[in-house]
Structures are given as structure tokens and as C-alpha cells.
Image (cartoon, rainbow over all chains, first blue to last red; front, side):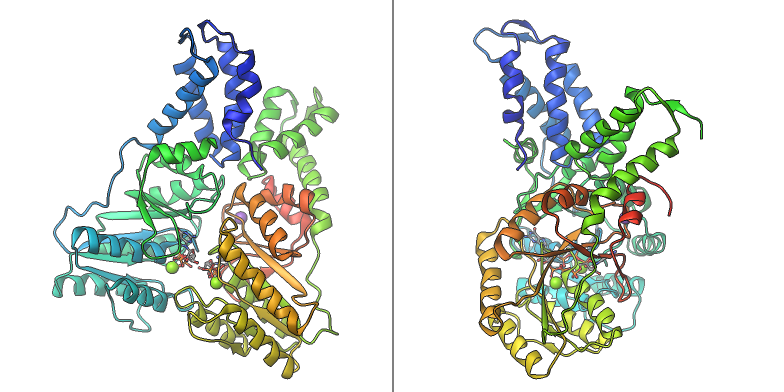
Length: 297
Length: 280
Ligand SMILES: Nc1nc2c(ncn2[C@@H]2O[C@H](COP(=O)(O)OP(=O)(O)OP(=O)(O)O)[C@@H](O)[C@H]2O)c(=O)[nH]1
Ligand SMILES: Nc1nc2c(ncn2[C@@H]2O[C@H](COP(=O)(O)OP(=O)(O)OP(=O)(O)O)[C@@H](O)[C@H]2O)c(=O)[nH]1
Ligand SMILES: [K+]
Ligand SMILES: [Mg+2]
Ligand SMILES: [Mg+2]
């Protein structure tokens, strides 16, 4: 239903002058459409503003070369700037620490933390031959611990035995202890979903962090997230400190503007993408693909 | 609050307020233009402007603020919950069951998510919490068959309501959407008018993709009601404003937490005021 950037810019580009330098006026008209396209793709307003300003600076005054369509030139500048902001390289999970390396999974309710924990465990097991322990610290959602156990069995990775009645912090300590005693390389700590504005639960996860000293704290976010991406990413980053972002449900048809919003407000890399419900549906982040998707091209 | 002339700058701020609440650029621009037509150049306080916008939003969503009505002649009234992964289907079933039980109704549940790990156990916990029988099979079983069996059983028991859970699915997955249609088809073999209510759960955190969700689920399984979940968070669910205009689907309830009591009627005034940042 939403038009991609190329379609939006069609008319404007027809009006752009064919030679000379791109004028402020030409670029301004194009950028109004870029702004709308980004907002429809759910890029958050502060990120949209910064982005548009950045493109403007790059584009105004650029010489339009003979034989080159000025419209395509603007699109290329927009696209390249987006790729640059999304983070040009793809970064993997950082495991450079004395094992067992704790990896903390964070995010709103239902964003995909538990599924992604199992996916990462499988990836580390198959690609890096790591011995991974999956531990569920979710004592709130019904059957959350069982969910992780079933997934652990599916991917052939160990899961921390469930002891009813323990608090999330106690489970976290036991997970690290088990990791040490049983020679695990990585301990994945899957936490309960929580609102970024829930002080009590945010304090709890800070306590978990302090008890385990995670090397990676990954914020798991749904690709369908709207403007709230800013609040979520800012709060989790400021309260807990995140080291990276995992974006789930990229297999849907959402434009995924939240990727830019989160990257913009936290400066943290998007490390992995969830591309399905199955345990092997996890991919490395490729900024050009997400850029194309956000721009609808 | 000091009054200030409603100029372009002030209007831009208002448009941004609406965009930040996920109204989407088109709806936000239209509402702002409406304000400009009536008040441009006049002295207005920020409070007055917000009141105005809240009023406009309220007008747009008022028609869809309609409670869920259980038809007593249906035995059972079948409610099918559908929606994208993780939006709150299973939890909403638990909350609805509590509410209906309190009204003295007998409620059955069907664990129609036969796909996701521990989805069956999750629903069983909600069944225990609310004192409702849960019809379930092992993970991997045929969801349509399970729904059929559940309706047979609930009907034989004379239940007032049957709540059917389904696996989360993204609307662009045609195979999974076909499976959902199959559930509906199979239920209709027992009761051609069932499901009487097909509820789509929408997560308030969702941005503009909600348009596509409603469009496709409506097309595929004729949803006739919405539940907006997770409104207890910082997201305001503003995409609902455009959805209300475009589809007119009733919003039966909102989710405001993870507990069994965290379901509320959708109140147009409250929703509109929260959207523009006004208290109460
Ligand atoms: N299509 C798709 N579905 C996904 C993806 N990642 C997770 N899911 C689904 O999203 C739903 C929620 O996933 P969970 O892993 O339970 O999410 P969570 O963050 O652990 O949820 P809470 O613990 O309740 O906060 C499930 O139905 C998953 O199958 C993905 O990349 N693509
Ligand atoms: N804060 C808040 N959390 C909610 C609300 N509704 C559901 N949740 C949480 O969101 C997460 C997902 O809820 P589920 O009911 O499992 O969602 P679902 O749609 O059944 O998920 P799938 O079956 O995996 O597609 C859980 O952690 C719930 O506790 C709500 O209104 N507010
Ligand atoms: K909210
Ligand atoms: Mg979980
Ligand atoms: Mg469910």
C-alpha cells in the first residue's frame, strides 16, 4: 500500500534540471518525499531529521554529470547515506572473553528473545563449534522456561535444569556457575519480556547484568516496531547498556525503519536478523538489503 | 500555559507529535491541516491545541469503540484469535476467559497453536488460572482438526463460549494464511456461522505495518474485531486512527499488562487523550 521512494520521486525527478549542480530547491523537493517515505517505513522522527539533513549536505551542489539522470543521482546519495548510517560492516557475536561467555538477551514482550536465543545457540554450535548452555530467566510468562527447553532440545544444545521458585537473579547465578563447572563456552541468558518504562523490571535486569557481567547484551526488536523504537532502544541502552541489536521477523513485509532508529539513538550495531520461526532462520546483517527495504526499492 | 500564534512552526510541532504517536505521515498531515484551516494565525495555548487534536482523534475512533457482545443463543459463541507472532493472542484468551467467567459464562479453550514450542502448555496455564477446560493435542497435530474437536466438545458440554488460540503468523506467508482459512472452513462444518468473532490482536508497538496486517487478515479470514495489546507501554498505538477510518473494525478491548485482569474496554476518549499527551 505504501509507495516506495522511486515511485514517490518520479514526478519530482522529471522536474529536476538536467545539468549544472543540484540546487538547494531541487534537493529540498526530493527530500520532502524522502522524509515521507522514511516515516511510512517507520523510521523514527529524530532519525528521519538527522538523515535528511545529512543527505542535504551531501547532495546540494553536486555536479550532475552529462548523461546521468539527476533523480538517480539523488536516489544513490540517499541509499548510500542510509547504508553508511546503518553500519557498513556486519558484526558477529563477540565471544572474546574467558569462557563461559555470558550473552544476555533483552527486549519487549514477544519480540522474539527466546526463539532468537535458541537460534544463536545453534549458530554458535554449528559455525564455531562452541558448547552452549541455554538458560531461561523468565519466571513470569506461562511455560516460558519449558519453551526454551523444548527449543534447546530441538537444536541439540544443553539447557539449564528448571528449578521452580528461583528468582531470575538466582537462575542467572546458577547458570554461570553451571557454565563454569561443566565447561561451557557460552551461556545464553534469556530474560522475560519487559517494557522499557517498567522501572521495577528494568532494575531487575540491571541486577542480572551485574551478577553475570555479560560480554554481549543483545536487544531483540521486532522489525514491525514503529516510532516507539526510540524509547525502547534509548531506555534499554541507558539502563542496561546494550552491545548490539537483533531484528526479528524480517521475513515479514514490514519496511523495518526501526533498524535505522535504533542504530541512530544507540550507535550500536545491528548484528543479526531473524528471518523465520524455525531455529535456523537467522542471518547476518546486511545494511544494503535493509536500506533497500526501508526505501522500498 | 502561554498563548502563542498558531504559525507554521507550531503546526509542524503538532504534526510531529502525531507522527511520534504512529499516526503515520498522511493522517498526521491531514489532521494538522484541519487545525490550520480553523485556527491559523489565532492565539492558542498548547493545551487548547492538544484538546482540539484529542477531540478529532476521538471523533475518528469513537465509532469503533464497541464492546464484544456474546450472543447467548450461540452455544458456544466461537471466538477465534488470530494475528502476527507475539502480539498477545494467547494472553488475550486468558484475559477474556477471566472476564467472561466473571459474567457467569462457561468458557472452553482450544489450544490451536500446535506449532510453537510450549504454546500448548502456555494456554493450559491460562486454563488453570481461569478455571476453563482446555482441549489440546500434542505439538505438531493438525490445528484445524483440533479446532473441530474442541467445538464438538464445547458444544456437547453446553459451553457459552469457545476461545480458539492459533499460532502466530506473518500476513505475507500465504501457506500459513491458507492453514488459517482451513481452520475456519473446518469449524464451519459444525456451525456454518462460526467463528462468530474473529479477533485480530494488534501490538501497540507496531507502526505502519499494521495496515498490511489488518488488510490481509481481513481478506483471508474475515476478521470482525480488533484487540490492541501492550498499551501499557510507551507506544500509543496511533496507527489505529487510520485503521479505524479505513476499515471501521470494532476495537473490542485493549491489553494493558500481562496479568489476567489487564484487559479493558477500548475507551475512545482515553485513547485520544493519551495519544496527544493529555492526562485523563
Ligand atoms: N516469522 C518470524 N517469527 C518469529 C521470529 N522470531 C520469533 N518469532 C516468533 O515470534 C513469537 C514470539 O517469540 P518468542 O521467542 O516467544 O518471543 P519472546 O521475546 O521470548 O517473548 P516473551 O518471552 O513473551 O517476551 C513466536 O511465535 C516466535 O515463533 C522471526 O524472525 N520470524
Ligand atoms: N505489557 C504487556 N504485555 C503483554 C500484553 N499482552 C501480552 N503481553 C505479553 O506479550 C508476550 C507475548 O504474548 P502471547 O500471548 O504469548 O502472544 P501470542 O500472540 O500468543 O504469541 P505467539 O503465539 O508466539 O504468536 C508475552 O510475554 C505476554 O505476557 C499486554 O497487554 N501488555
Ligand atoms: K502506551
Ligand atoms: Mg521469551
Ligand atoms: Mg500464542
